Image 1 (cartoon, rainbow, N blue to C red):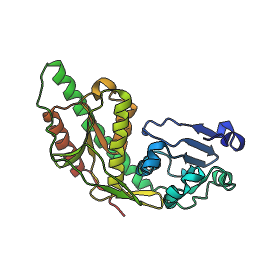
Image 2: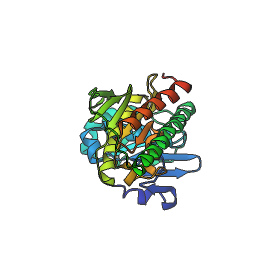
Image 3: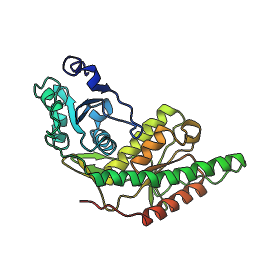
Length: 286
């Protein structure tokens, strides 16, 4: 899809499918230069079906990338009528044949429709990461101890389903398998393979990011009542290490991955999350 970059952007100024430790789904291409960084997004199939996933991917990238990084959404002409409403949230929203695209990529001071990220918002994400990782470390340790002792605790009771529809920037998302545990929003992750679990974790991230932030010209402002969430994935201990990309990426977006279905461990995690959240300073919304 990005063949045109080979003609206009030198290889030493672009990274295709960049890997970032805090992003499960990053931008498709990063274009860089002196004091310049632009994240290029091209809608994937699931994002064309529901642009909510595209907005969530952009929000995560803006939280994780340097604050001066700009964004560009590039689509094919048949997709233009479906995605043009997203233009206020990207620096540039256009097709790959737009003659102004290269000019935008080479203009570090031109943010187009969007605005630069706010440092305090990214600091808020860092605090969320620290908080969530405390919960994750407790859960991983408790699950290992439980397994080593051969103890089978009661499984989480699937009730108190959270069926709220989430709306943001003209899109709507109806997450599945979300419940409330100890007043903490949680996602049930039932997958037993890495690929399926990543897919379900991505869905949990979409729900988290769209419910925790409000977009204004591409800047995600945390909502006042946005507190960290839980992702309950009983098979995660066998699939992802404590220091793995999946654990870190979720924590940075405010989701603590719990590798257990043990009701006692999950309840303790929810209690610890609430306690840590109450004891931390809130950034506040707009």
